[in-house]
Length: 288
Image 1 (cartoon, helix red, strand yellow):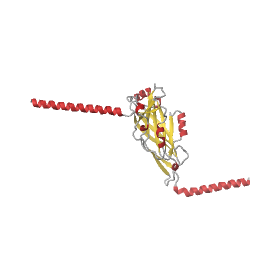
Image 2: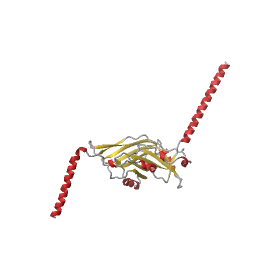
Image 3: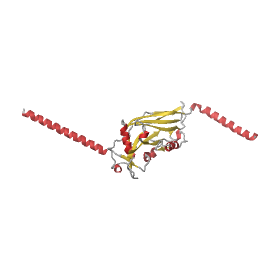
Image 4: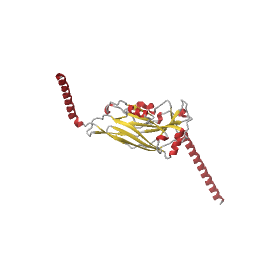
């Protein structure tokens, strides 16, 4: 009986030691994970996230880049707390609205599940939503039109990277991207919901037998940029958080284009019209 009791005590001791070791290992790994979690930030002198990789916005533009990795981190970010309860993006929907060659890309977003938490966060922090939309070839955003949105206080700031030549047809143009800064305030949110409109335009596409060409939009990159309101030093930093939104619904745009089968007919009519107009001008000058 004493032997059985001793064995029971030995098993209990071994089990307790194993549980203690596992708990310590779990706690250590959790602390290590927290300490290795990167804090991304950027100096207030850098206005746009896209400044760091603007050269990449060509026809070789990747569908997805590690944008947060381009921001400053490490020693520069020490002292910034990660303990603040930062709002997360719980829903993201996106759709193209309109007809023809001028459309609007509409984003519908919901932040977190508790409106009070969002209001409390915005009470202590200046926060901006940053949307980076990588446009497919054949679609462009007019920088001058977007500046009107900034002047009307619809956007806080906006920038277009890549090919900004609005006159080029699709076959001669490179890809571009738009970076939008939206000021997050309780007055701009409705039950933690936010709707953002981005006006877009189609370039002249190449000829196609079907009379249409289709372009698809990949998922946008969404960031939350924030800093404490009571800080007024010129050396402070923006904390940059990747909202890591789930892939948005694919938006496809069917752009009208010329039909290859009509080239001969259209060219002939255009040539005859030019000849008739030229002869009319010559005759008018001779008669009058």
